[in-house]
Structure formats: structure tokens, C-alpha cells
Image 1: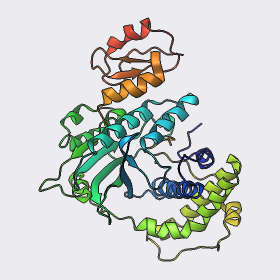
Image 2: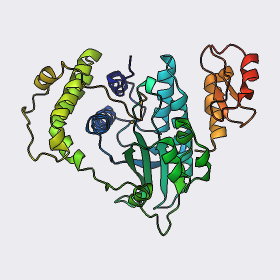
Image 3: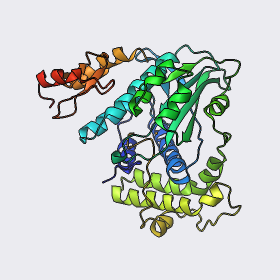
Image 4: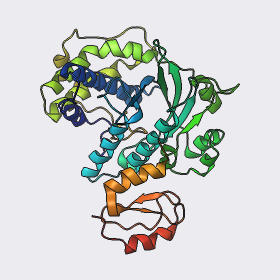
Length: 370
């Protein structure tokens, strides 16, 4: 059975989670509702419209507990890194593979640390090739292109452009090696995910558009699809959020999500500006639309991001986070020195990073990976 790329169960669980200390209930619910709306829009852009570009921003923050961290105005207060950690826990509890989620977590940790003192204009690249097809991933990748920018109050923010493409591992290596010489050795999705690269502006590379052109993409940055999609389904998102507020069953939430997807597929030509007129047939009656469109399962699609919840050195993060969480399941490869996490009830024959077979004796001599 295919893993869902958008799990409706997350929405209810996250929305009704305890309110963080020192924040008003109204503010937290506003953030959580905004996050649901943005998640639905982003999911539709990737999985139903197949657009190449999107855009969002992260805030630069600092406090005594966390030091410097990146946060999102659409998520609960605190480091975004916590979301990556929760994704690992969620999948681990369900017996699902976590290699990719761990790589994402490590990669984001590195990116955050390297941007702590970055001046305005600094760029970053983070490549996300698709994972295994058996886990529901498709053919396309994301290259996340980020830039430190100034907001209206002269504070720094991180502008992020997810650039959707269908490049192979070798094609990703071909452009990334100009910014990161180690990229020539990256052969798996987790190699790219663990190793984002921060780039100083140069005479030829000033903006995300310059990087997109360098990669070889002819299509210019354009998110007009968002401007047409958002008002079109605003009331449907509101109806979905109301179901979440009411703690509706996953079955009812899935029906509502299917309805939104099917409606968007029907309006795809209008949203992508292939047709000037919308066939809009409802007026602020989301539950009627859910009934009309929600009884048919949309076509299955796969992307580069699976079912997971969208930096000091990685070795330090491994010691603090991975070993603390996984205990006897972790050990360092004697060949490359990187941390391996032994799958449940399995022994490793090769390093998960460099492929060395020298980990076999380590796995055989270790305790059971319960």
C-alpha cells in the first residue's frame, strides 16, 4: 500500500496539540490554520499542478534556549528543526524507514548553523532527489534555492524557492559540484540531503534566478499559479480546517482532501493560465463540494518528498541527537567515520553512507537492535 504524500491525520493531531507556554491560544490556532492552508496549497502545486516553482520565507530568530534558529510564521513558535525531529519519531513509531528523514534533519541542522551569521545576499542550495519508489516517491526532484534577504523592518529573513525538476542523480552532481566539490561523490538521495551548500554572491551568481539559469532551466520563476489557486479554493480550505477543528474522522478529512484535489484537477487549465475562464460551480458551500467531488480517489502520484511531516557539524549533531535517541542502534563506520543507524532486527552488511563492508563485523558483534 502506497504511503500518502499528504497525511490528513497530521492536521488533526497538530491542530489539537497542547498550546506552547507563553503564547495565546488564538495566536497558536491562527498559525496552525495558516500552516494547514499552506500545506494544502503546496501539496496541490507539486502533486496536482506539477508546477516548477513556489516560494516561502523563514524567519531568523535567537533565544537563550536554542541560540540562533530558523522559524516559520506558519508553524508553532520555535525552531523548524523540531518538525524534522518529529517526522523521524512519527515514522519510527510506525516501523517505517527513517534514513531519509534523518538525512533531512542533519542537512537542515547544517544549513541553519551555516546561515547564523550570513550577510544579506548569501545564497544556499539544498538538493532533494526522490527516494525509493517502493515508498511512494515519483520521478521528480526539488532543488531548494535560498537567499538571505532584508524585510521591511530591516531584519533578515530567508527566502526559499523550491525548484521542481526531473534531473537524475548525475545531472544534480554536474551542477552542484561547481559549488561543492564533494558533490562528485554523492550517489544517493541521502548524500544530497545531508549536504546543503552555502554560496557567497559572486559577479555571475547574485540571485536565485542566476542559479536556476546556471542549472540550465529555461523556464523563468513564476508563481502566478498560487495567485489563481488560492482564491479559487479559499472556502474549501476553510471547510477542511473546520473539519479539523471538529476532530472529524480521517475518513471525512480524506474525502474533503480528495474533493479539493479533484476540483483542482478539473480547474487545472484555468489555474495554469491555459484557459481564461474558470468553471467554478459553487459559492462558499464547501461541504456540498466535498460531497460532490470527494467520492472518487484522485490518481496516485509520487514526488521527491514522501510522507514526512513540507547546524553545527553533523558529527556533533549525530552524537547529541542520533546516539541519544537510538543508543545501541548507532555506530560509526570504521571507513568513513559517519554514523549508521541499524534497522530494527537487522544487521548491516554495508555502511549506509560510503558502502564499505567493514561495518559487517560491527553489526554482527553488536547487541540486538530492538
